Amino acid sequence: MPATIRDVAKKAGVGLGTVSRVINQSSQVREETRLRVQKAIEELDFHPSPIARRLSLKKTLTIAAVAPFFTRPSVVERLRGVELTITGTKYDLIIFNVERQERQEAVIDSLSRRKRIDGALLISLVPSQEQLENFRSAGIPLVLIDVNDPQIDSVNRVTVDDECGGWQATTHLLELGHKRIGYISDPLKGTSAFNPNRMRFEGYMRALREAGVELDERYHLHGETSRYSAHELAKTLLDLSNAPTAIFAASDTQAIGVLEAARERGLRIPADLSIMGYDDIEIAEYLGLTTVRQQLFESGEHGVWLLLKAIEESGAPIINDVLSTEVIIRRTTGKAPS
Image 1: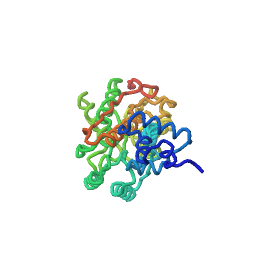
Image 2: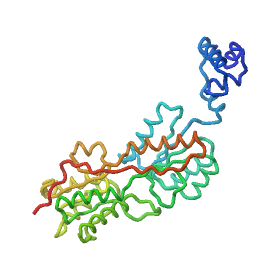
Image 3: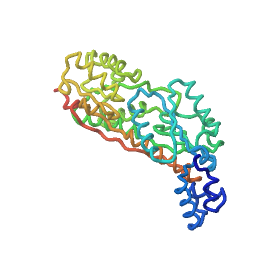
Image 4: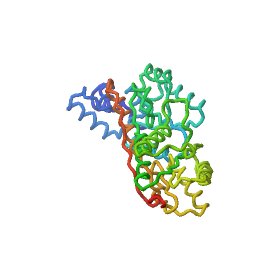
């Protein structure tokens, strides 16, 4: 029969509580006693039960990550940062995919009302004030990733300066001599004050204003985040009598749709049309796509460390960790055609 904690206590000549404290690395054990217990554990080849250890710590040693749109490469890369960072810690990870609104509400409500987890990460999801209060009441630390909502300032966050990213992308195109710059994105209106596409659009408009270029409303089209939708929107832009000489897409996925539409029209990239993406997902480098790099993997990584700090250090100050963006110049942007 496998050795039990009672066998260890008997062999070491200590109580069950002392063995438990040694297993859980408590500082409330004398060094001589600790060595004696560890020796007994080794000689008996004792392996503590994970469930029993969690009960003794009064923790689940489990973290939940909730995210929508697993089909979006940017979300997958954030989750990759979360998963790889948690690997090697004492915590397990549960991931919830919540694409529908009702599913989002059900999962978040469930996590905030039950003691099934020690902490939660919400990725690109804005919780309601009621949900935030439920997490606080349950004593469950929460970290928001990619949620730059000015109405939420009482929760740890990892955000990206999307307004700056939109400004950087548009400024790059302006510096190449482009004046007619299209912008393709998701819808700018939403139920939340947080909308990264709107913030990128605000950066786009700021860059145009600073350059003295008048905004042409025909040059902004929006639809769902998909290659097909962006493909159709790009064709509409390219059919204008005074078509854009450059198109800035709010994601690399949408930029790929723009590339396909341009090639169908027989346009040379970038001699006839410059194309700019956003995210810098893996395929962007393969396609030679000029894009705005946001720190996707790092946002997941930073989110985990903020959450672990909040779990293990009660009362730690609230942090808004703002990650920078940068333009990555490749083959799809060039000087405006004369």
